[in-house]
Structures are given as structure tokens and as C-alpha cells.
Image (tube, rainbow over all chains, first blue to last red; front, side, top):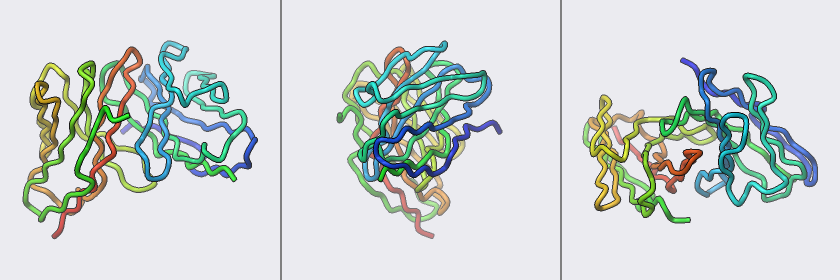
Length: 113
Length: 112
């Protein structure tokens, strides 16, 4: 069964450093998402991406964040200068068409020290 | 942001009985509703969904009911099994990008 994959599973970085989180969505899906879950809080939406552009972004997704689909398979989230409060589980999701079910990857645990 | 609420933090049910998880929402623009199951340190796993134009959807042991006038949906699991023990999230889809808005989750414990 096709699944969303994410790498790395755990990333530790120092405050101010850049990180790139990687995702491989399900191959025939057209919509791509990043969500995050800070420990003890809700899963919250960051950004949606469709037709090679951002379709919607949340208030959290400021200029420090960017997304890219550099080729036909990968979808990346870059945080340019990490802050302590960026520590969270980051989930990638994809959807074949909308509205429909989104399938989530296993997540990347980002720890900013 | 309290657009999707799951008011019960936890639920404990005996194996074989019915589990009913509830969810309320405030945004009438939500057009699709989903239930996800999640284990610690894993991503949410899709369970079942329902379009806003329907009031019931069934898939095996899982049934989702939608009451639009009350802005309420529920997930019924019958019969409940110990392997169903997990955190269950209600989510709703809205907007051009179909972003999901999640509830806080309900921890379900099924006792054998």
C-alpha cells in the first residue's frame, strides 16, 4: 500500500541553524501539506501546496519557512533560522484531490537546542 | 482556535462494546470531516470520512454520523477491540487548499 515517507525521523539542531525536512508523498497525489504538533498541543496546519505553488498558509508560516517540490517526488519544508519554539513533530501529508482524505507520514521530530 | 472541539479527553470501554467519540464544530464552511487514529510518535492514520452533504458513512466496524444542524459528528466503533486503543482526532476540511483543522483528540482505552 502506498504511503507517505519522511526523513529524517529525528533532527536535532541549534537555534539559528537552517533545517530541511523531507517528504515523499504518495505518487499520484496532487495536494501536499505540512502540519506540526507541539508536545501536548493540537495538530496544526502550516501550509498547503498545489500545482507548484502555495495555496494557503497559516500565521505560523512566516518568512522563516519555505516549501519546495524540487522534482516529481520530493516535497521539502525549510526553516531558515530555527527558534526554540520550532521544536515539534512535523508531519507531511498528501491528498489525491480535494476535498478528500489526507494521508500523513510518520513525522519528523525536530528538537531545537 | 476552537473551531473543532473534542470535549472528552478520554474514554474507557469494555472490549466488545460500542465506543462513541464525539466532536463539535463551529465553522459552517467545513465541507469534509475525517477521523484519524494516532499512536505516540507516529503520524495520524486515516480511519473514515464524511462529506458535508451526507449524514452517515460506514466502513466495517466504524461509522461516522454527521448532524449539520447541531454542528456535531460522532464516530461509532462496534465492537470495540483492545487494538483500537489510541488517540482519536476529529478533523475538518476548509478552504481552497483543503487544510485540515484538528480537534484536541480523545484517548480511547478498550479494556479486555
